[in-house]
Figure (cartoon, rainbow over the protein chains, first blue to last red):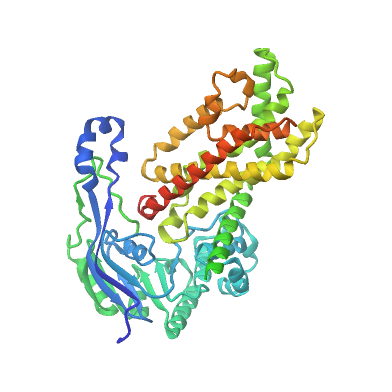
Length: 272
Length: 256
């Protein structure tokens, strides 16, 4: 642990501007425009509040918490698709996000065509994808379905394909958002084997999951987010225990706060 | 590193372009023919309306129409579809950090491919009216493509980025494109502006380039000043549009 952490959150706060203007409609726009100009820009939904934690090289790290606790925002910040409102995030190495089911896949293209598209979207050149295609297809194990359009696939099959591409990206840090839940038992085992193999090679693995058993058995450490703040960051099994304790207490995890509600109350929550 | 980065950008645009090309008409019976039938149907409608009902006589009017409508389709399709480019790819933008501009480049190139695929139809009309492609094509086809693409990309950068923040822009664009269509000499000729409205050709970024295409297809001399005017518009719009996109693109992931 003397090495520098590969992911470092320092007092990270992420606030989303609530899109008040687009929710009020034309009538509201006229009546509330002066208010909007005065206050609208400060109407914020705070997804993460003063979050700090480190992830060390080679760690298998889980982010857990109830819906809306800020898990997906955390992953998006690590992947650098968003910038924090305040605080700093440092990452060392090639971060590779595993796409949400179906995102980046086109339903009318075949599995094989989607592998190329997905690989390129995730940062490989065509040449690099081509060199790995055989291995990717072998890992996905979809047989003759690989040349069928993706819309004929089950959710589990697209997940297999997505995971197969992601594990061939040579990431230093692999981000996985709730994706392993859909594969069947044998594919899950294959994924876990691959995660362990990555672990041996020193790849850092960050996952969001609701599957307590999976977190307990595959992860070294975990952070528990509650209402956008760090509730606990410790060994995975202890954090899972605390999560369950938290869930059993009624109303301990309140709905995320929206400071200054937009008039229709639709805060832009991150999906998780 | 720079070589790999360039190779990557090329591959990204190509992969997205191939996806667009393969996916657009995949589940329709007539497929690619739709990209021809649309402007042809419009040409037929305007021909009947102007030539038969209004009885306005314009020389070689069917050729005038196709030589204007086909390149216009590229403008209209790209500008209209660019409003939705980032929103339609929300899942990708929220999860990955690839350069978002690639989505716009591939979308506009997709419409360019469809335009180029329709050029044989224009040539068919030319031959019907006894006009043949000439040596100028070697210079002017690439030149006009570059100029038109610069104008389209500049506008696409601006409206696609704005639409992420202000979704009403999509509807406004639909109306705007219709207005723009009638303000451009497509269903009428330049002469019909009768000199009094020539400023319209200068303030309209695509007028010069579209008149350039038409002159080229009709074997007439090309007004280079107007093409230059479009080129200046293209350079300005592209720089302003790209600068604007660069400033706001980091917020796309949280707004799409």
